[in-house]
Length: 370
Ligand code: BGC
Image (tube, rainbow, N blue to C red; front, top):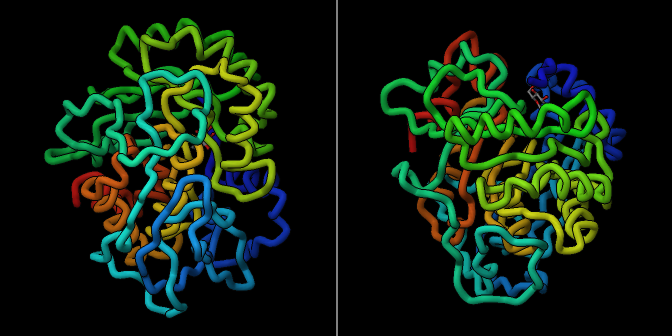
């Protein structure tokens, strides 16, 4: 299993991002690590209805008013959930329903296994995902962990967690939740160990596989879209039809060669040959509306169900809990977001979802609430 300290990870993240120079590193959250790589996006919001037409930008693109210490969390999206009518410093309340969304052309219904990014044919319905919903929760909440000992506080009575992953190929969770293995990268022997570990995961009940982790970051899998496509075909395609297969998990950086732009280049390089059932996305330094806009943007671009495999909200505890409630409410209850199948927060660990061994309020909300 791959394991790195959060600090190393944060350093790698900084090193890997071309906008890193604009990051103010000395700010108060640095200890928390990865979620701070992208920070201080201040969204001024006064919601209004926006009619989103596929392939066309919303009239008023969502803006994130950015302070001086800002790294842009996501680039301006071509499609938005909602656009601010006028700037106001009021943050949306957690009860705000994502903002009178009128998604006219929701993405086409994803098929179980698609070979390429579908053509941009608009459809008028929001598709149901192909995910098995037998767990009872529409959205499947997952626990991203390195240390299995920490999982127990997330899996007590009333837990809504249904799956786990550890960025590794083998299950060491010691619980009964579905384990989702990750190939991760193409160095360090990962491709060699993958076939046996992937088969073992299937034998033990895994229903889906994650492929590369942040190939758009130097400190992570660090792959060009072309190399990623080539290895995806070699290592992931053989499992198509047996389990559902992810895209590479990408960052939310807006750089021309990162994030959703990297994903576009990946699908271009695939040239219809990569088996991809769902997108895997990360989002850091974001608040509720920004996350939802990002997810909708991704979905509208690639027309595939989405898993959020890492998320880090900006701010401190109360703000993070507000964001968590806001996002969960929409992902669970707003049919516009039925394309989001699974959601794992970064991560089961001290300084992230745990504080001095106890679940933070937003971690409690994630594992047991909303
Ligand atoms: C890394 C993993 C690591 C995890 C938690 C991920 O971004 O790719 O290797 O286990 O963070 O530290």
